[in-house]
Every structure is written in C-alpha cells, then in structure tokens.
Image (cartoon, helix red, strand yellow):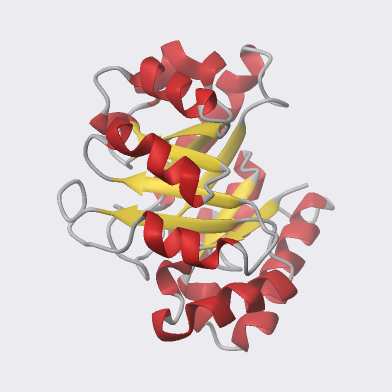
Length: 235
C-alpha cells in the first residue's frame, strides 16, 4: 500500500487545526510536518509548540521532517511534542548513526532525508538503522516547486539497494516535492511507499477532498498495473 502524507507547509496557518482535520477526513495516512530554521534552508516555519497544539486534533501519525541545523539537539523536544517519525537530513549530520539511534531511543521511528544533489552513498552505512528514507524531488525550503524528473533514477536505485539488503519490507521510501497526479505514477513505479503532497492537496483545483481523491485514484491505478507513466509527460 502506498501512503499519502499531506504536508501542512501548504495549509492555511490561520485555520491549521481545521485543515489537519480536513485532510484526515479526506483519507490521509500520515501528516507531514516540515520544520525549517532559516539556516539549512532559506525559510522559517514552526517548531514543537505548533506540533503540540495540533497533536490531539487528529489520530494521524505525525511525520516530522527536520530541515534544520544540529537537529540532534532537539530530538527530545519533538518527541515530547508528539512526533511519531522524525527525519533528519544527512547533510547536517557528522554522526548520523548516533542521531538515528537517539531518535529511536526516544520512541520514534527514524528517517533520513537526502537533497536532490546528495548521493545515496551518504547513507550506505546506516540503512539498517533506518525506518524511512526521504528523497527530496525539489530543493527544500519552499512549497509549490516543480518536480525534478532526474530524481526518478535515484528512487529506483534506492529501491534496488534496499532489496539487495533485504530491507524492502522494513525501510519505507518517501518522496517529497512536486507530487501531483501527473508525477505520482512515476514515483510509485520507481518504488515509493509514501507520497508527500502539500501544494496539490491544499491548493489544487478540486478542494482538499477532491484533490486527495484524485491523487489516491492515480496511485491505485498505478499499483493495479495500469500503463506506466513516462517522464516525457512532465518534461
């Protein structure tokens, strides 16, 4: 089953509680929460206080993506705020394995994210310490960016690597950036397990319910062995 994780980066912050309830009712599997510090990425969003404020509004797992420098300093705070899965960027981590272990020690699942220009070799030695690998298909920092088609081979390579290691049923592949009904079949065909979608879900043409339904429909069609999508369709 491929899961859909709406990103609240594109939600209406003046009505955030209503928006997270809306995506849960529309069939979201997880809630993706992008935390940005204005240093690692050129934007600032929110922190544990906001996460804590919406935790009891929905029953969805909280998939918290830390796009911040020195994330190891804040693991306990995000655990206390209600994160169920905590993802850090490999680019920020001189001691990645230690950080992943600390995340698990705090009762959360551990994820690692890679920017588009970061090779998979950054995580070769920690695959068995992971619950999730997040492949960025845009350069992180802002919502609404266009999907980078050259990330498809990277997703395929990661899927193959996990299979070689016997981890394909243990480590999820998550994809974040430019996910729409046009690009979703590509990443699902490549091996993605979780699709993060923010702009399309919250700002697409058919409202949250319609947008989620459209995304779910193309995912199900792809899994049912419909004709494969082509990169030419989005380039």
